[in-house]
Image (cartoon, rainbow, N blue to C red):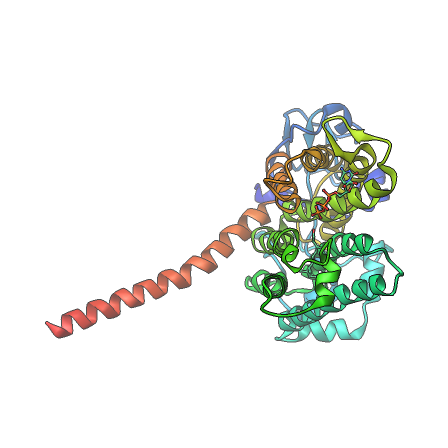
Length: 405
Ligand SMILES: Nc1ccn([C@@H]2O[C@H](COP(=O)(O)OP(=O)(O)OP(=O)(O)O)[C@@H](O)[C@H]2O)c(=O)n1
Ligand SMILES: C/C(=C\CO)CCC[C@H](C)CCC[C@H](C)CCCC(C)C
């Protein structure tokens, strides 16, 4: 990433601003993704010649592409607005000499929402136990949320299958949104991952019969058979653990994987069961055109929403709308095809769909530099203590050997 480029503030074009994209810093120079056609990219006027994503120095150019050359807007972290900035260091250090982005006083929708955050969020953000509070809240929220759907199914408000799919569709994105509440501590992603890990243990214990929880079995199984918890639901929470630890909030690949699994696959079932009877897919009569269209729209829509939210909060580089439209469309289409294939016997949808979506996201979307830095930092955080412990053990062993000689 070119430091000078990363330092400059740009103003979004009217179309970008209208789409809710925020005033942003410049992003890294990255290859233009294959999924953005020059035609799709050319709606924002900008002087450009090479087919790379580059930052320019024009203050009026905004976020956009021209003739295969695009810029990534790069928002500074404004998560929870002044709440976070008062309570802790910025999520990322600014580039040396880079002008810090000041919280906007203009009437941006996010700024308005952020400004209206209640006092307890300020207190939460300032607390040294913040991550533990969020973790506890999310873990309790998961139990309450699943119980709510159990209750709605038990009293006949929701059909059991619909209740199960609504749990599938909603818990993932709600969990992902809680990521924004965690601090910038490198261990925060590990603490966040404890929430799906706890659910893994719960599903495992109930699925194997170690614990009895008929409510959980009713909410997440198709037939009331507890052993079903050891299949789809268990893979579902493993995917959430992987997205949290590997991608966290600075890599859109995790948001996309979760969206395709929850918004896409979830909606495919809900719509397919209702509107799919007369339109089976030619290569898989168990699934329908209506279900697959719902998967495409649901996966794309949820991913677009989550990416816009996290980009707006400043967790990663904003993509120009053309990039998001082309790349996300291609990823959602591929995930839809994978979901529609008759391969359920061999690989669960909760694995195949997010794995393909994440892999394609890594290939097609220009990756924010923060994501790579985050992966390196978390790898170092994991490796350094282990290596230090290894060195200490080796030193102790060497010491005891030399003493005994
Ligand atoms: N592209 C799709 C996907 C699903 N469906 C409908 O949704 C039902 C359930 O599909 P699927 O999600 O594969 O079912 P399960 O295996 O029951 O659910 P899960 O993946 O959550 O285990 C199908 O029988 C079909 O009626 C559809 O019409 N078109
Ligand atoms: C029915 C499911 C999958 C089948 O395809 C989903 C199972 C969901 C788990 C039982 C609960 C998962 C909870 C999340 C890890 C955390 C949600 C937290 C939030 C605050 C609601």
